[in-house]
Each structure stands twice: as structure tokens, then as C-alpha cells.
Length: 117
Image 1 (cartoon, helix red, strand yellow):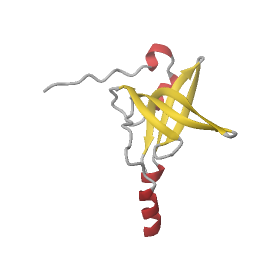
Image 2: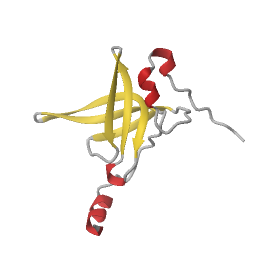
Image 3: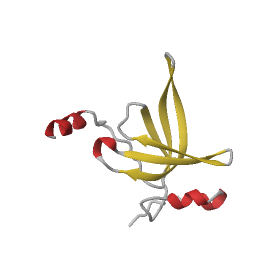
Image 4: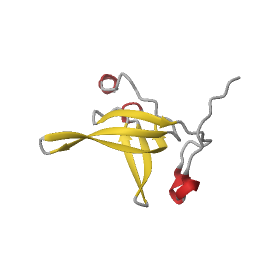
């Protein structure tokens, strides 16, 4: 079992992007179509994060033509090129599955304001 943990440690990314629940992110994903490779951008709100070392994932949700689309991205996958944080959201939950039932303005997450103490 120790050998498996060592292999998993080697394949972890050195720079882990800041993916927090409630943030609006832009995920750059490598898509391979035949021999060609291109980068596709998926932008949405992070509604869930599953912890687990090498198998850590995060779920991003967005509305596309009125239909909710969710994608699960492995954090340490080589297909995930980079993750840009567009907006930091202020939430009080660990999972935002309640956004699935909401449409329009009610599905928005409040923006986190920097508090100075």
C-alpha cells in the first residue's frame, strides 16, 4: 500500500489552483479530437468539492441556453490546463446542490467582500 501512495504523490500537481465552493471559475480543458488538440473553456460556479488526494474533484455548474450543465473535473488531471478564479463567492455551505432548483437571479451567489479588521 505504501508503494501506491508514493506513486500518487508523484502524480500530484505542484501548483494546485485555488478552487473554493461558491467561486465563479473558468476551467481550461484540453480536448483531443483525432490527432488535433485544443483547449475548451468551461465557466461556472463551483458547487461541490470532493477531497481525496490524487482523486480530488470539483463540480462546476452553469446555465447553457436555459439548461443546467454540470461537469466534474479531476483537480490533478493533466487534461485540466488551468483554472482561473473570476469571482469569489460568499457561501455558508459545503455543497451548493440547492442551486440546481434555482433559475435566474435566485441562483446567484453573493460576492465575498474583503473585510478589514
